[in-house]
Image 1 (cartoon, each protein chain N blue to C red):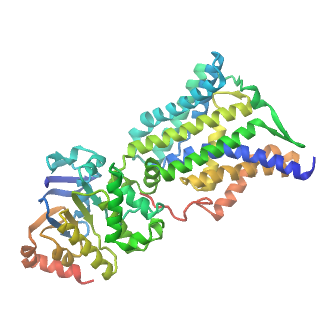
Image 2: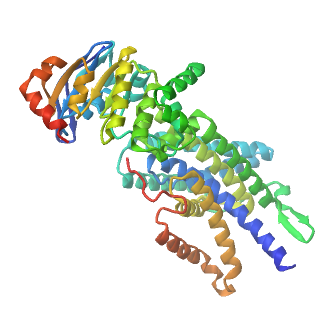
Length: 237
Length: 298
């Protein structure tokens, strides 16, 4: 479904992605693991068309995403829920969710999906008229995911959905992630919480300083001593 | 005339001039909110619209045709400005964008001087705008009443636009978080073009009202309105639409108040006192009356 082939990305002089090759099959939940600065978020931003690679291709169902705008990438169904939530603080929860469906023209189904998102995250349904800025951190993360779902993603790019959240909320968010996966949404999940990520994913890639250093099924990754070390380090906090 | 009547008279005056500042400030705020660009060339759109209207009036067109053509000319000029001058440098540092807006100003003003000479020309507003209504002992200039009501109608329409339409909500979203706006698939180019079109259209309306009020137009006529609009949007909180409107009215009231309260010898320095008041305000509220205490920079 999605294939990154030898993708190189630079921030000015800094070589951030040094030839990444990653593949996601339809229906899979694939996770990108790695420390801060390994290039996980950069990878997602490049898929979304916000960053442009200097070389390499990103093919989504036959379309080269490196050649089309973020607007058109969303239209293909590749939706990112970015790190740090990036909700619209001055807009109401309802407006935030509807902005997620900004390209859709099927008004009735948009309203059905609004109800569905509110059933996934009941707290959003209770706060539809509040502005995004008044929500707690966990609620904002739910709003960010809900907003992404309003686009009816075919491929959901989830960046650090558990960052800085209380364990109960992390549980909710991973629960929803699994639920979405079971409903057939293909997901590319970036996580620092490797233990959690490996619980829900099918396959994974380990990134270090802009390169894929290992990939495989969840079982293979878990069995690897290097991941083991990283994975224990990642869950120590 | 009693003190009370004098007060009402001055209040109408203040709201009328404040309406014009508010309409101008909205145009600045819409663009600043999304692009972090202070578009000083916004004032020249007033000039473009007024000259377009004047040309049609000179050719014998009825006033309403000339007025619509003037507003259309401002709108088109604003759209061209965005496409030709600002889109190519999008994402450049704020200073580069600011300097570009000065370049656009210089270009437009000098083009107007070449085309129309620097001499001011009388603006033949229709006779009814020169009349005054009498409400008992009060005399209210009809141009003030028109300015106040036109601004009121436009503000209501604008509020409906930014809260009830998808483009309007997208515009607010883009001004709050441009990255998120791109990630949800908002057509950012279209939203920016809308912001310029609406702001420029409002500038066209202000141009007509301003010209009717002053009675003459010249190539540099946009300078004071845009300066006042900038001050208004700083008072209200740069980038905030309600702030721009509030700032416009506050500035109008402040000016008229000082005009009335200052001893006669000091009235020529009225603007100086206005700026002192602005400095005092910014000492206490650095982001303006409605500005958030901390803006997220994207």
